[in-house]
Image (cartoon, rainbow, N blue to C red; front, side, top):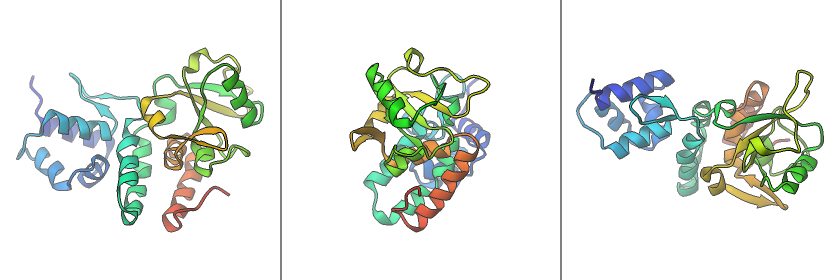
Length: 235
């Protein structure tokens, strides 16, 4: 059975529970384009449909499937980098929606490990085995690893499954850290801060919003403060 672009886009949008305006904002296209595609008034190119699907966390295949990647983060972060300061607030306002499209616990290759030492010590151990750690979450937003601000810190490494310096979580684990595979997208938004590789503050905030439980709540509070005062950091 042939599936039209109109029905495919409608399925993806309703599955995410998004309005046409929200999809347009995430994909960086006019809302009228989304409306006209769904109404069958225009037939999008494969590139356009793929752009929209990627922006809301899907990949085009024989069927609509979860992408399980960080791809939804890229478009809003690029708009922040390339847009005017006046547009920053509108892009940041989409962050809770964007984060919900790429939950950290559902991305491919994620591994839960125990954090039984200070974060800098854990990072040193990861560097000693050439894991190439890149700090994310609230620590990256604050550009500081001196204090663990996250309930579940997020650190990207080359390959989580081969890390030996940190143990998998057990029933009695108090602090859990998520090891995520470093992707090309992560590399594109990585910088060095005081000798520590970190994702950009905006990527870190997205990962915090995409984290489970109380961490997402704290991140939403931080985001709200940032919308009022763009340079607000984690206290």
